[in-house]
Amino acid sequence: MATVKLGFIVQRPPYKSENPKLALTHAIASQSVEMYLNDGDLVTADLAFVGDGVLNCLKNQKAMDKYGLTSTESHIKSALMLDLSVMVCKEDLERFGLSEDDVVLDAEEFGADMVTKVVPYSEIAKMMEDSNHLLFF
Image (cartoon, rainbow, N blue to C red; front, side):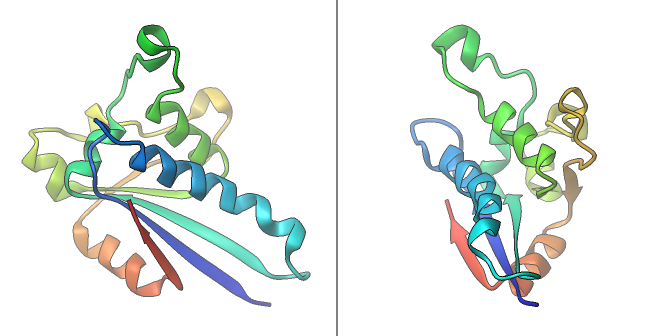
């Protein structure tokens, strides 16, 4: 039984770039590969928002209302619904004057059991060390 661990690191703000949303899309899509795996093999994905990337996690985005686009907030909720580990760097939130109350922490309305974890950077660094493949966005 083999497990491939993917680490998606989002470090860009949600403005003027599709990179952060691509990170979420790829992390979510990584969970559909099980049909191509041998029995017992797994692909797991961890998402971490660091630096300016923590701005992607803000609650109450109005992308659908204003632009007719799915928001990054809804992508984060979809990731939680698929039981992906979502982490937000505590130090970077504090740098922007934000707290846990300002970010997407759960997707209860989708029936998700997973929650976003606000963690110190040291936990994100540990996740990166434990990953087989790292993707930076």
